[in-house]
Length: 238
Image (cartoon, rainbow, N blue to C red; front, side, top):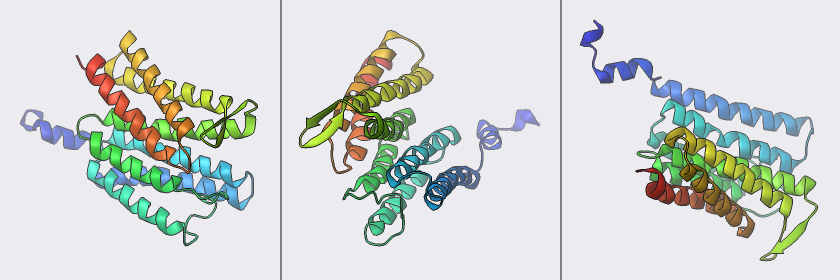
């Protein structure tokens, strides 16, 4: 009977159904949101830390989408929906304690938009590039902000913004680690992989340093992914 199964049939047997794919991803996002509301309810940490928990945790859903091969249309649709919710939340308290940190910023909106743009641009042929851009935004930018705010002792000003060298170095290191791991998983080991990862990390850290009012959630993932794609086509695709 196995000889009679087509390759498509085998794929359907081994891959989860669409609703199961969506369900797994939704469970993860729901778990992250519950953790955030729990932290807020028991007042275990301040609002900025809660925001970064969501920032980092929710972004990891892109890994589930990659591993489960969730269709691009689902990711783009989710991005549009969450973008609308975040815009409404600036007027109505739909996301209390998550995007309200005492400053005006469209960071959460840009966060959702950037994920949708990356999926639309890369999901069909280069999903790892979309994953790279999203994870650099979530882990790199998220940890850079936390480290800079809590342990940043060496400050510098750039374009009217105050940054810390500790935060910028954290952004550079985390972005390099993420880029290296993803590119190694796709292209294997080689000096080109390490070089591309280092350049991508440098671009990400620079964009994070120059961006303000939450626009780093747009410039960092799109810029990092764009550079990674361009360099991978030149140095890694051969």
